[in-house]
Length: 427
Length: 203
Image (cartoon, rainbow over all chains, first blue to last red; front, side):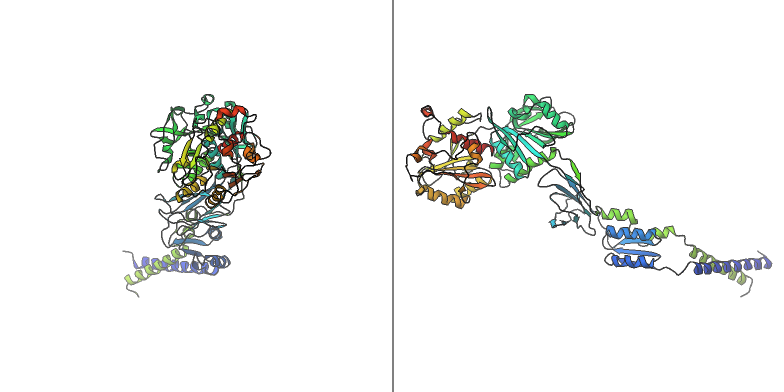
C-alpha cells in the first residue's frame, strides 16, 4: 500500500496530466481552425453536393448510392479526397458488376461487336448516339454479344450502373475477290456477299478465253483485296501468289473442289477426303448444312482449328498462314441451302458466308477519337474509392484520432485522481 | 459442283409445253460454246411445286391466257426472292394477244412491274455481244403476230439483277428446232440463249 505522501504525489501528478491534456485539447481547438463537419448525399443529388463540398471542404463526405456514381462524379470525389476530405460511399443494395466493351469487326454491315456483362438473365438496354439499339437478355453466364453498326458512345443500362464505351478503332475493309466458274454456286456466293455489304469483285470462267469479270480484274494484293474466295479447283490462282497474299495478311477461303486442287496441297493444313453426300431432307431442317454434299478433312495439321464437323470429321478448318488466315470449306453447292432451305435460309446463307469472309479478311485498323468511356463502373469505383462501406473509411484511416486519445487520457487522469482521494477518505 | 439443268416451268393454265424443242437446242448451244457442265436433257418442273427452287433459271412460255394458282404465285414469289430468274417468252409474239396481256398482269401482281431493259444491259454482253440489244427473230421480220419488231425486252429488277425477263419476240418459235439443223444457219440464232444462261449463272 502506498503511503499517504505517495498518494498525494500521485494525485498531484494526475491533476497535472489532466490539466496538460486539457491544455492540449484547447490548443488544438484554437489552432486547428473551425471544426469541419461530415456531410452526405445521394447519387441523385451528388452533382450539386460536389459543388457545395468543393466550396466548403468538409472533413468527410459520404455518398449513399442506389447506383454506381458516374465516372465524372468519381473523379470529382477523388479530387476531394486528395484535397483532404475523407470520402466514403455505400450502396443501397448489392449490385452485380457490369461491363461493356465495343470492338471493331471486319464486316461491312456489322462493323462493331458489343459485349455486355451483367447479372444473369438480366434485360440490358443498349443505346448509342442515335438511340436504342437493342434490349438483349443476358444468358446464364451474364454475357451477351451483339453485332451491328453503332454510332458514337455506346451505353448499357443494367441495374445500378451505366457502363459506356465506344469503338477505339475502325477497320479498313477492301474488296473480296470471288474466283470460280460460271455456276449457281458462284452466282449465289457473290450474291450473298454483296447482300451482306461486301464490295465483291468476281472472276468467273465460262469458256476458254471467256471470263465474266465483275469489277476490274485485280492481282492478289492486300492493297486492293481483303480476301479471296476460290470456289473450284480450276480457278485456284498460282500457289506462289496465294502464299504472298497470305504472308501480307490477306485472307483466303478455299471452298468446294478448290480444297482438293493439286496446286494447293502444300498450302492447306488438312488433307481432303472423299466427298460425302448430304442428309436427305436436311436442307430445310434445323441443321441445313448437313444436307449439303461435302468433303471432310483428315489429318488436320497442328495449329489448324476445325470450325465445323460432319459427324466426327472436320468439314470447315481454319489456320494461320503467314500474317494471314486460310479457311478450308468442304461444303459444295451451298446455293441449294439458300434456294431450297427454310424461310430464313437466304439470310442464314448470307450471314454464314459473310462470317467466313469476316473470319479471314485483312482489315488494318485505324484509330478513332475515343470519347469519355466508363466500361466497368463498379470495378472502377472500387478501384478509385475503395469498396463501398458504411463510413468515410478511406480518409478516416489516414487521420490519427489524437483528440479522442487526449480526451480519454484526460478522463482517466481525473478518474484516477478522484479514486485515490476517495481511498484516502477525502471527498 | 452441280451441272446446269435447263428447266421448263409447268403451270396449270395455258399451254406451257408449246415449244418442246427449245430445251434441247439451248442445251446443245451451252455445250457447244462454253465449258459449263450441263445436263444432257432438260426437266419440266411444276411452278406449284417446291422443286422449282432447285432450278434457279426457269423458262416459261405459251400461247394461251396465263392464270397462276395461288400456290404458283406463292412459289414464284419465294423463287424470285431467293435469287431465281424466270425467263418468260410470249409464243404469240403479239402484244394484243391473250398470253401477253394475262402474263404481264400475273407477273406484275406477283413479282412487280416490268420495266424496259436497256439495250446496253450486261445481259447483252454476258458471252456473245449484242450491241443493238435483243436479236430479232425471223417471226418478227416476217411480220407475223403483231407485225412489230420489238426493240427491247422487259424485266422485273431486284437491285441491279434481273429477276424476271420478259420477251415478246417469240424466241420460243425461233429456237424450237432440232439442234442438228443449226448447220443450216449462217449465224446460230440460239446465241442469245447462251447469254441468258451465262448471265443467270454469273449475276
